[in-house]
Image 1 (cartoon, rainbow, N blue to C red):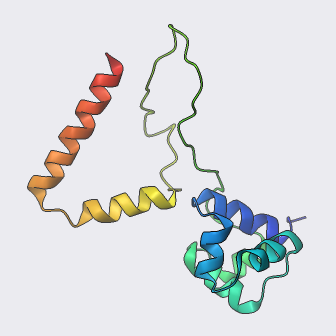
Image 2 (image 1 turned 135 degrees about the vertical axis):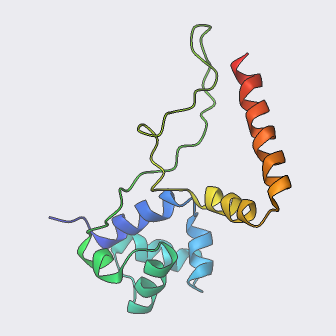
Image 3 (image 1 turned 45 degrees about the vertical axis):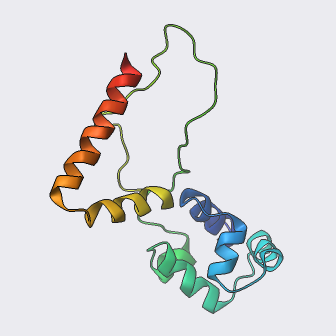
Amino acid sequence: MSEPIGILIRRLRKMNGFSQDELAKKLNIKRSTYAYRERNSAFTAEDLKLISELFSVSLDALLKGEISHPIKFPTEPKNEVQTLNQPKFQIKNDEEENFAVLTNRERKHLKKYRYLPNDLKELVENYIDSLIKNTED
């Protein structure tokens, strides 16, 4: 049995890095109204249409609870104390990393990156590489 639409939408919202307030603004409703609708699975047809467009999910899949891409909460760096034998930063290989799901913040950065001229793209790539190298040392 599929989960209630409110829970599914909450998972999509969190996965994409939206707060209730941010999604409420996109739907042109108050945060308290949004919170009620999410908690009670009481979204209007117009809300569901906008949500499906915002998260790039078909309305049919949203209503059936059958999302074609995996639902995963965004992974943010944790402020945990690291032990000496634990690496500070580790890049996952392509098989371990899930590139099908990006947070809203990651999408914004990729959009900006796409419009950079090639020389600036190279500068950004070199900067990222230097940051990673410095964390590995």
